[in-house]
Length: 450
Image 1 (cartoon, helix red, strand yellow):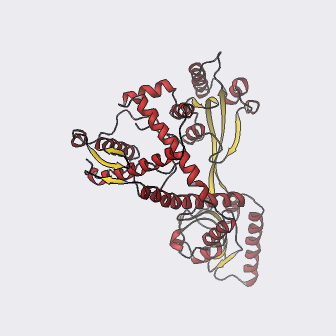
Image 2: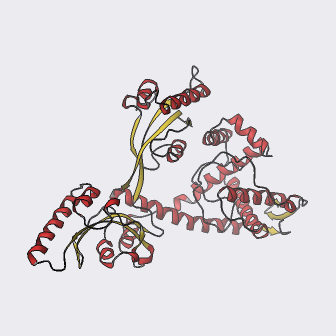
Image 3: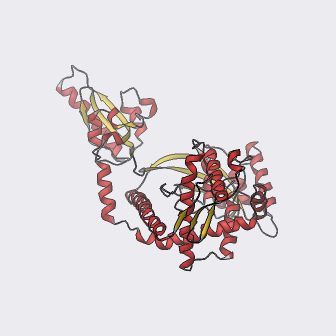
C-alpha cells in the first residue's frame, strides 16, 4: 500500500506527461499487494539516469512501477505493459529529482513537526493511529525512516508548487462570464446532455378555437404555478396528459439531439431549474423544466445534497478513543434493534452543538464536512447508520436521513466555473513550469530501466 498525503497536488510520480490531478485521498491498504512481475524483481540494480549529480537506480524505477500497478489495480483500471510503463516512470522520477533539487537550492525544507503532522493526517484518514500506520508500513516492506523521508519530499514538492506555480494562475471575472455564455449556448450540441421534466396539455385535432384557448389558459396556469416554485412533480400529476406522469414528468438525462428540437431550442439559454414559456406542437401545449444540464468538460450546475444527523464523542483523559468507538457501536445496535431512538441518544450523549436538535446537521452540499465524515456519509443509503467514524473532531456515529438534487445558486455556479478554469490553467502552467525545471537540470540517461 502506498500512503500519501491528502492534498491538492499535481500528479507527482505516475506519468511525466500526464495532467496533474487532485488526490482522491487515502484508504485502508488491501490485504494483498499487487506484485511486481517476477522477472522485474530478480534483476540486479544499476544506475539508469543521473540528474545533476543525483543517480536514479533501476531498483527505484521498479519500486515505482510496482506502486503504479498496485494503484491501478485498486482502481480497477487496465494494467499497462511494464516495458512501456517503465520509461514513463523514469521520466517522472527525473522530473521529481529536478524539482527537489531546485527546492533545496532555493531554501525549501520540511520540518520534523510538519512530517509528524503528515503522519497523523494519514493515520486519521485511514482510521487508525500513528503506531498502527508504522506497523503497516513496515509490514509492507518499507522502513519508517524511508517512509518519513518520502513524506518530507511530498511536503517539499507541495510547498514548491504552491510557491512557484499557484501564484501564476489567475482567473478573471470576464473569463468566467465568457465560459458561462459559451456553455449556455453550445455550438456543438453533441456535447450537451439534458434532463427535462415535462407537462403536456393535449389539444385534440378537431378542437375548436375556443377549446384551444381554454386549454392554453389551463397550461398557462400550470406555468405560472411552476414559476412560483410549486413542486413540479405535483403539477405533473395535476395537469399532464403525457405518459411520464409516474416519474414526475422527467424524461431522463440524454444527449440533446435525442430531444425534440423544439425543447432544445427553448432551453439553450436556460439554467437548471428554469422554466421557459409555453411551447406549442401538434400534440398540444408543453410546459418543461430544466432538471439537469451538462456539457462535456463543464462543471455540473446541480449538486447532490445530504441531510444527516450524528452523535459526536470527543476523546479525553476520561474517555479513550477505543471506549468512544465501543459506545457508539452499542448506540448503533440499540437504534437498529429499535431499543433506542437516534435523536434521543444524540440529545443525551452528543458533545456537539447539534445535540439539542437531536444531532441534526441540516442540508449539506459536497465539501461542507471534513473528508472522513463526508466519505462515510456518502457510502450510506437513506436510513442507514455508519460504523463509528474518526475525524479530527472526535468519533462520530452518522445517520443519513435523505438526499436530494439541488441547483447551484448563480454565485455558486460562477465559483464552480472559476474552480474548473483554475484547475485547467493550473495544469497548463504546471506543465510549462515542470518542463522549464527539467530543462535546467543536467540529465544523463545511461541504461534502459527494467
